[in-house]
Structures are given as structure tokens and as C-alpha cells.
Length: 526
Image (cartoon, rainbow, N blue to C red; front, side):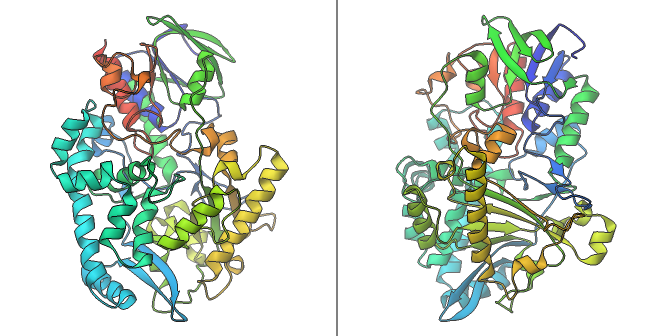
């Protein structure tokens, strides 16, 4: 039970953003209560022993860190660190009947050679260097703005200070610049994948949702790097919960919030253990859940589009491309069926209501960079984790019926692994470890599983379509544009109810940014 009947701030949801907000507010002397439905904090950013009797702590849902500002780590005194991957990506392909691929990483000279061997010239590598040099400069300019009040569109454009880049990434479908810049189908596909993580779109979608997804995937940390959390993703949320508690925040788990009532000045939060009063309520849940708690009409439906798979292997599989060490191929992002044409075909098949015949996906091995997530015996025996993220698997392909959802998920998993097997010298199934009950160590989650387990609407990992990181005056939810919550991108239609989860402007990913920004807005208003 909560210790008090009223608080300065009640935070609904103990995921990483809610914990960030709690820590900032408590450090500023506010009384803070965090209410979490599950029996643990962390939300989608947790580490779990997923397989019975096996000492392996997997980052079960979210798994890499890019958007977490070092400012938050410093401000909150977090005992948390990340480690860089030595290889960015490996993409296998069969050309002229020969297994080959593209390894990006290991130094500029090695990457240049890999491009030349795949494409026959230096053209694509030169284009790659130029393109990612441009996104790197964009990242340096845009990333620092994410923990500041929202800029206007004009102000952000002035900050970018590059009209060609602005037009390419903020105004034109991403496919246009990809096709103008690169000629090789495989290279085009590797670039496009960052626009499709959890986003069901084509390269030429006029909504530009693919551009917004791409933007957030290339600006993290001012570099675009995606790093491995040491100790697993749960190490971050455990550190955040510790920081919040040390600052004086109260955290209550196993407490589902069932309603929020507000008159704009004070609020009452009802949960299955009673009701508490609050000056402000910060909601670390999707806009759909916020509407339900307020008893209001829900926002337009959101839809996720991914298959999430966790595995533990007794050994890494050998590759058909014998020039590449599996330890390098799997330490970065291992792209499967993600050529440019393959991605479009898979999208069209899924949009027509059928599972993609060659499902695109990407894999990486956490334990190659950070073996601390495995018990000492598993490390000695050569065990490794694999995390697979499948693209173009929209929630509409699955049904709410539990058996039907499981059957569809299993069919998609089988075809996804079969696609991976085409690039392996031995079946992946032969490499899977087994748990204490003799079952293969593999688990899969459909978008509907993520909705049920985590409250992600339609399994959408961003809670709703991502927004460009500037103020949009057409967003009616922002209310009074002069208010602190609107200026920080966390406003709702109620002045003392703030959105601090991924559905806020500049939300999405494991960043803590919405939590930071909601706390800043609340502190500005006193």
C-alpha cells in the first residue's frame, strides 16, 4: 500500500521513463509515488532468466541502447555503462551462386574492401561514407535538442543548417535519397532497415513514418551508435529504480491503476489498492491506456509490426560464407532477407494479409560483447545468446484468439529461422541449448503478445507513430502551446496530467527522454 494519501506527483507505470521522471522529481524535493501493475519495475527494459534452470539473463524485450543521453546518467548518478560493438553489421547474400556478404566494421580499410568485393568498385563505399557522414553531422546537431524544450520546425531546421539534408530526411520519402545515393540492392536494404524497426511502411510511404523512424535510429548519442548495456537492459532499470528510491521516491509494484480523475488542478489516481491524491499525474503508458484511465475516447489505433525472438545457443552456427568468423558476424547486426527489393516484397505481402514468404529480420549476440549476462559455466562451455527482431509482421496478421495467435506466430518463426538457415552451414536448431526440462531455449513474441504482456497498443514498441522532434501546432493534445508541458512535448488535454512514456513527442526507444522532459515540465510549473 502507498504510505501516504496524497503526493506532489503520482507516476503511472514503473518502466524506465517513469523511473527517470521519479528520480528527477524526488531529487528536486517533490513527494513522488510510482505505481506499477507488474510485480517488478522496468517495463520493456528488463533482464530475465527466460529458460528454466538456465543461468542466462536475457534482455527480453528491448535490448540495445542508443538514445539514452549521458546527461541523464550523470544527473542521476547511475551505476550503468554500455559497451560498443566492434562490428556494425553483417549481411549475407548469395551472388552468382556463391555465398558472400557485406561486413561493415573492423576499420575503414576492411570495410572498404568488403564493399568492393561485394559490388565490384569503390562507388558504394564512397557513397556510404558520404551518407553517414551527413547523418553524423545531423546527429551532432539534433540529439542535444531532445532534452531541451521543443524547438519549432523552423528553429530545428536552422539548427540542422543543411537544406539538402533537411529536404532528404524531413520532407521527402526516404526511399528517394536511398535510391539516389546507392545503386546496390543489398546496400540500399541495409540503409533502409533503420527506417523499419517496429514501423510498418515502405521506403516511399507518403506519411514519412519511415523517415521519422530512421531519424531516431541515426541520431542517438550524437553519433547514431547502438551500444550493448553491460549486465543486460535490466541493469539500467535497476539502476534507475535505485536512484529514484535513494532520492526518496516511493515505488509500489503489483498495483494496477484503474482510473484517473482530474479537474486540472488536483487529481485522484485509483488503483486496486485504493485511491491517492496528486497535484500532478505523469503517465508512463501509451496514449491508448491514458484515454482508458481517464474514461475518454481512445486515440486512433496503433499497430506494431515485429516478431521478437530470444534464443540461447550451445554454440554459434557456422556460416556458408567461410570468409567471415561467426563471432564477428553475430556481434553486430546480422541482416536476413533485408535487401531493398526483399523488404518491399515482404511489405506488400504483409499488407495484403499474408505472412511474408521470406521474412526479413535482424539478429545480434549480446554475450559476445558482454558475457556477464551468462553464468560462469555457460561462458566456459561457449554458450551464446541470440536476439532476433523480425520486420513487417503487423498485428493485423494475428488474431486475438490465443491459439490462433500462437499458431500464426509459430509459422512465422519457422519461416524466419528457415530464411536464416539458408545462410548457415548447419541448421540453427542443432545449435540451440536446452533448458532443465529438455526444451529448446527459444521464445517468440508477436505484436499481440507484447500488447497483452506490456500494454503496448497493437504491440507498437513506440506506443504510436513517432513524431518529428519539433513542435507541431496541429497536435490538439498539446493544448496551450505556451504551457510548460506543451513546450516540453509531454502535454495532454488535461493541464496537470503529463505523458512521460514513449508516446510523448521525442519518445520511443530506451532513452529516458520523455521521463526527463515530463519532470522538467512539472518542475517549471512549480
